[in-house]
Image (cartoon, rainbow, N blue to C red):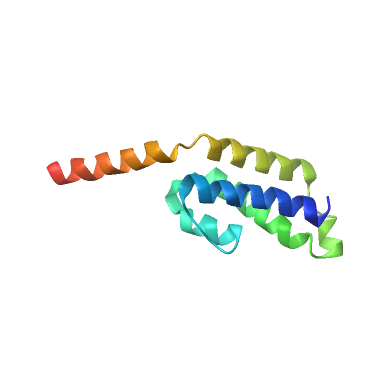
Length: 104
């Protein structure tokens, strides 16, 4: 898989993280670190694999070691999970939790 295809997959995930979780960053790795508990551990590891694959494509020999099936699987899982997040619902839930703590 060439670098442009991997960059396209990474950029799609980055855009979804920014849109759904409202987390900005210079790279996917930075966005994943900032996401913290907002993403399950499995999704974080999939995102790290995507970010690592993006770095590996810059090197000609390391680029050959990328498992394309795992890369596509990681991308699909992340996109599916991120598309399932409703930003408005998350915001309402956060406000309700804060109000419950204050009321208690």
